[in-house]
Structures are given as structure tokens and as C-alpha cells.
Image (cartoon, rainbow, N blue to C red; front, side):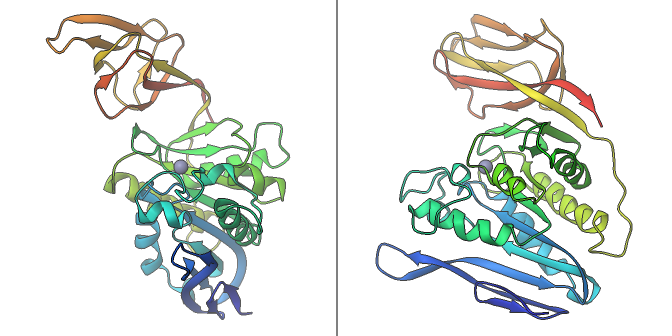
Length: 319
Ligand SMILES: [Zn+2]
């Protein structure tokens, strides 16, 4: 059966790329999101993937750029639908939010096809996502420093929670954040339509981080093996799960000296970071309120009073 996404159309054993038209840019020319359809020779499940929902989060684009040339439709069971760049306008200017309406795309799902710029893009990509059996929405911790992890956002009481958790485990980057996300996330809206969805959060950087991209490529292939798109068997590995987050800000201004590395265990009462003057004089020492894992940290050392410094993933277990 031929599968179509935008202008991309592929029969069994074929691959095609094209554009998913959304509307027009400010000069009146039509624009479309780059899309690909990889139609396996044999039938199977459908996987939907998208990247750059936040326009400065490029690692997911790197994952897709590396995964697609490695896919052989003749060796594939099932179909893969891909939107390579979701936040078209933000990507053009390397910004996080869509500059046309100053909106974060991942608060606009399920979208509205007659709505704002972001709502229209959300509606078009949501339509594609909900044709699938599984969804990977490739993100990263923006330009801050973050571990590679996968987020389950539907909430622990959602009927699809177990299936989302399984998808996160199949992706297998080692860490999972299992915490209900804000309204408007694709990983909230698609499970409501019955489609297990997770957000792989592939590190955090400006531009591309090859280590995080490699984990993302491995994660996609892990999913393809586990859910039977590829012949090889996929094994599940134990994941470290955090169920909540504690954020730490600077008690005063100066330069931050982190005492913990990303991924390192933190015990309650241990020093997370110090703030010093430009001359290295100590101004403040901040300790952890709870046991956990250093999950995310700011990139730049300079902080003002109250400014974000780091996050600790807490309520840790493994599954
Ligand atoms: Zn993001």
C-alpha cells in the first residue's frame, strides 16, 4: 500500500522525501516542512519521528540526517514517517520559539489548522503523528548542559503510561524522566489519542553534539529492532528513572563552580555548587535538598541573584 506524507509518497520497498505544506512565509511564498516516508517491503507497525520542534534543538536533526541513509526499505517491516524540521520559522533563525507568534511549539499540540502559525504546524504534524503506532519527538535540553534521557510525559495515571514507559526503555539511553508534562506537549496529546509517545532529550548544546547524536541514532535503531521493524532482536536494558526534579538558583551573583558532574549521584546535604566573586572569593555554597542525580546545568558560569544554575533528578529508581 502506498503511504503518503505531504508530497512524499512511497510504495512497499520504497523511500521518498518531500514537503508537508503548511502555509506561506512573509514574502508570500509557500513553505513546507521536510518529510520522508520509508515504506518497508513487509507490513508492520508505523513509527512517526520528528525533530526541531524547538528550533535551536539540532541534535534530533542530526539523528534523522544519520538514520535515514542507513534505512533499507527492502529490509524493513512497517513504515516510518518523518518530519525532519518541525519549527520551520525558528529553525531558519536558530531560535527556540517560533518567531512568527513567539510560541513554544511543544505547548501548541494538538494544534488548530485554522489557528496561529504554531497551531497550524502542530495540527499538521499531529495528524501525521496520530497515524502511527509509536511516536518519537526528538528534543534536547536546549542550549544548557544536560544528560541524555527520555521523557515520559503522559503522567503515571494515564492508560498508556506503561506503553510509553516501555517505549522509553526500548530507546534505551540509560535515563528516563517519568513526570507528567505541561499541556500542549505532543507527548501529552498523542497518548490521549492512543499513541504511545516519548521525548528523547538528547543532551544539550549549541549546534551539534556528536555524542548525543550517536545515542539518538542508537535509540532509534533500538526502537526499530524492539518493535519488529528490523529482523534482529531488540533487548531491553534497565533504565535509571527519575520521577521528579528539583531546580536550584543562585543565592547571589557571581561565578558558578559546579562540584558535581552531569549524571553524578548527589546526596542530600552535599555541595552542588559554589558562587564566587571574579577574584575567587567564596560568596555562597549551595547544597542538595534531596538525594538524586545531577540532571542539567547552565552552560555559562556567570549568574545573577536568583538565576537558574542546575537541576537534580529525584525520586530515583530503576525499571
Ligand atoms: Zn525541546
